[in-house]
Image 1: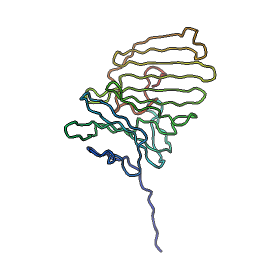
Image 2 (image 1 turned 120 degrees about the vertical axis):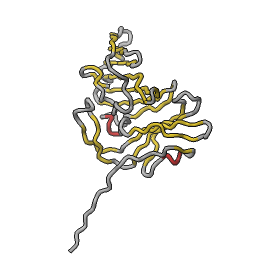
Image 3 (image 1 turned 90 degrees about the horizontal axis):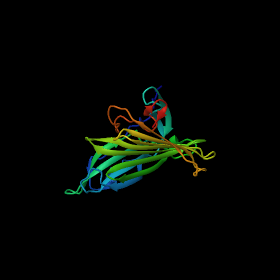
Image 4 (image 1 turned 180 degrees about the vertical axis):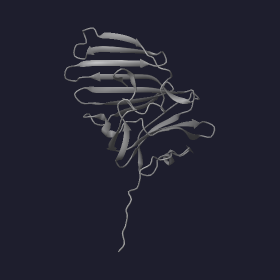
Length: 227
């Protein structure tokens, strides 16, 4: 008698093309582009490229949750990859500057609302990412990353929570370059009533970047205040 052992193929993130003139060569087998945008990210007057890729099958991923350090959760979902290519105007080639396999929320990470990914945009030489989700309370997150000091540093962020039934709104804006935050408490159904505003100083040793900010909701800026 003979026995046969069957091993499931292990998933691994793709190693994206380092340089190319043909953008189709960026897309690995079994992956697709779900968002793309052009714009100048390194202030050389060339149209750089940012793309988000998604795998065609769901797999089990260990994803950071909460404070990004103490707990990982397993989720069955389609992996996503964010990549940025800088364009060289002389050679007319695109060169891979950044590949991030963690930061982009997956399709199932938006809660009851569903798909959380909403925005990929290049504006003011910065990379803008937007997400939405929630249930009884909805949330909107916007992040602005800038290429500086040879890394992608988070310079601004917005975190808005609102209750579509009661109209309660909590809007938080963060300026990490100035180390300031502004919080607005109000009601979307009573705009004639003055909102309550608060301003706070932010305390941290260095700017967060794509390398040490794994994914949305994992940075506890202040006690029980996650971004």
